[in-house]
Length: 302
Image (cartoon, rainbow, N blue to C red; front, side, top):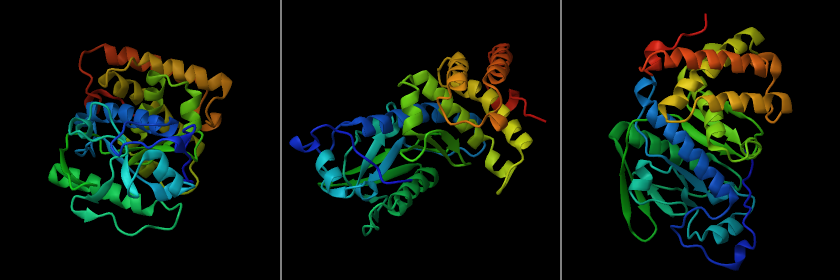
């Protein structure tokens, strides 16, 4: 991931409280991705084979910004590590945490020395510590600037990290994380249901562990296409369980296909019309029964 950029107009004209809500486009986009991702992950936790408790919070490090001093001033930070985004409706929000709360330690582990400017190593290590504490202990203690310690109880999730990536213009997934680029987010026009469709598709890749299935190196187009069909079809189940209209996935596919709004290789992913038809058929299968347990009812590709 490249260095982050801030977009707040006249950013240095005022100070921002240390526990403020998102204050610029970047933080608002981060919050939207976390909120939608958490909603999908928490609702489908009973069916994810590698699920783990989570709290719906992403940490940030000013050292990942192009100008750390400007980032501190914009967000009113007294330290390097702070809450970057909180999922609306998640445990972290319920515990009173908000964007820009400065964090001094994660589950008793100090934030450590500053890495080289532009490095993500420290913040990802702290995020992993947070996720491990939630998964293993069922709670996470965050020590905040000012001496306050907030302990957040973890609740079931699919155990997947959702990331807004400045360096991407599309979306992708590994077995443990989902990334969506800022350009991709912008191209969807802020439409929550269509963003949910993209994130659900990538969460399907993670839940089905397509990374392991395909293996490293060059991947045969036919094998990739099979995993894309699976992710397309499973995405409508994931959306429905989270309360999103699965038909939004059809709208999203039709929109990105002919207009090329997202960088998606047609050979491996298939034609938009074919994908929409297959997802519509999956919606019909899903709605044939009130049981949306896709762990039992979803049919894998041969």
